[in-house]
Amino acid sequence: MSKFFKSVNGFLNNKIGKEMGKLDPRISGLIGNFFPGLGGGLENYGDNSFLSAIENSAEDLRNNVANAGIVSARSGKGRGTESYDWRARLRPKDMGIAQFYGRQNTDGVTDAYLMDPLKKMGGMVWQTTPQIYLAGQVDYNEHLGHGMNYPVYTYNNSRPPPLPVTAEFYANDVYEAQYLLAVIHFIRTCTKSYFGESAISSGQYGTPPPVLLFEYMGDHGFNKVPVIMRSYSIELPDSVDYIPVVSVVGGEEQTTFVPTRTNIMVDLAPAYTPKKVREKFDLDAFRAGSLYKDGFM
Image (cartoon, rainbow, N blue to C red; front, side, top):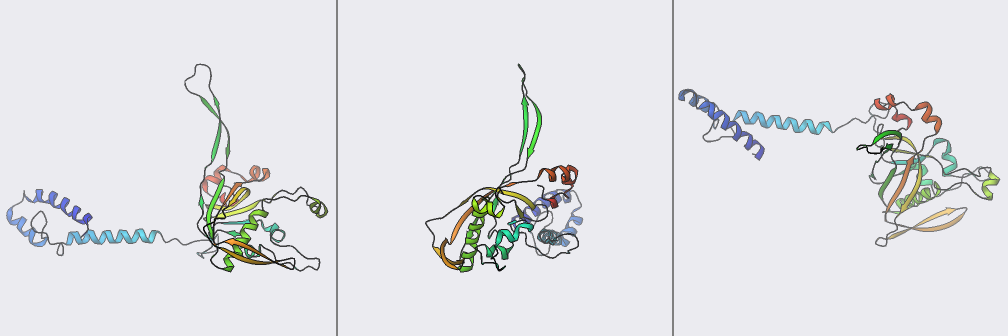
């Protein structure tokens, strides 16, 4: 018997024993025959129906707690209880997928591209659970007059929290190594703008780095949050092995070595257009939880 049940039994016996001491000895003896050990005397846990009821209730409680953790994942209105992928994902917007992941030859045939593994995965998907710290900020103006003991604060503005996302990435085989190389190339690419003579000839000069979509944890977590990548860091440790990855770019075979384990940190920041903030943000809708579907957080 567990310490919990023994402590409950001892407490109840002390309380009941005091009351039974006030009864006629014949009545207390009759009660002792039906409930051995009740109110003092030799304990017989196997025959004590009261403690058995407590044990059954505790077992039911444990089962209820375990069942409470089983949640039917719903992927949206009208989609039933079908499971969906809630892993952390960073991807380009739908309109820019073709341009971001691949290029076209003059004959219309798409070249093999370094980021093909990400295109198949639907974006940069974190292999392991990332570590994220949410730290929002509210700015107030502080007014402190001469001789005042307490400042007066007036609200200025609120800022959405930055999203530093850190996680381990692994390359245990050639396929994971290709994926890791694609992740590294993805991060390098989405932090650069169109510039130079080629951008002028294509008419894309001045185009800044793209606004991406960050998704994680489901409907009320990070639901298609528009973000920009402000910085990144990729660890290239000296204590792990490196795997060669062969790529074909422009008909030329190229080899790149990637680590079997690395830590990658990307610093994301929510980026909303003035029109979206002005027309769609509604504090009452946000409080009710219905504004997450528009990417607000």
